[in-house]
Length: 318
Image (cartoon, rainbow, N blue to C red; front, side, top):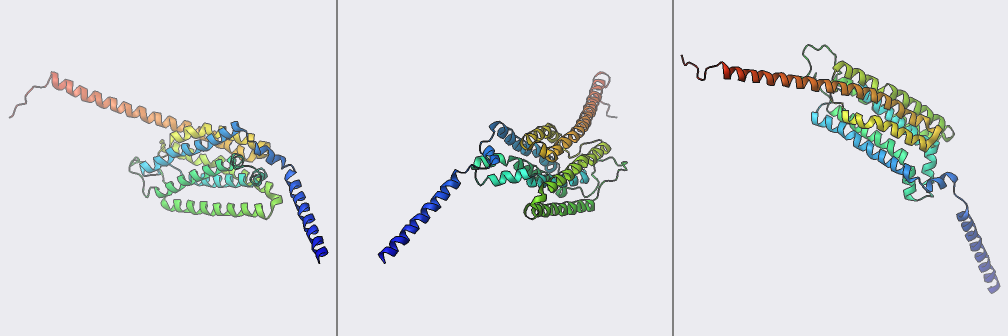
């Protein structure tokens, strides 16, 4: 019995040594080259990427505040809002399903938390922008004017969108968001071999939606000859920010990520057109206001001068 126990003990020790050897050898294996690169993040690109995230948050605050303070979303085209939230949903799905993004997420199992966060900032950026635009969409619906604003010209024959249109736009946006989410999960976990094809396709769809997103708003602003609830400070920050963000993502994902950063180049250009138009109307309105004030002050001054030089100090009581 002692001999049998000794042999069993030796076999157990040999098994443990073999398992330890396999474990140590697996720990000695080099990690994925892509993960190894992410393990040592570029602090310069990290700083720029983090600055973009903060810039996205700050740039949307003026638009949120303007709608809330005016308690009206008048001036914002329903189709601009619809195309914006749907293009952002496509953009978020695109960057999440890019194989490069999937590799970044897988590397989070083997690299440090900081390196994982730095490598995932592309996803954080797009997710932040989608969330901020979703807030605009919500405020637009909550403060949608139920009737033609009283500030408009009574003789104006422009047809303004109805609340029914707002509800239809909301239903379409929700349905599109759910559909894109389902497709993203399906190709990520069910058809992984077709993931890049889907990512590029949904990116092209997002680019197409973004390409026409600002056209309804440009038309609405042109027809109203007024920016309404559209925030010029937001546009001033986002127009150059779109180009900076595009360069940052191009550095991160390279040519294979063209469907991601290409969208930003398109939106940045259209934002610039809308910004130029908005600044023109704002300056025009300010000049008109100053001219009216100047005319009003001169009229009051003339009345005072006339009363001083020509009017009697006391009126006859008869």
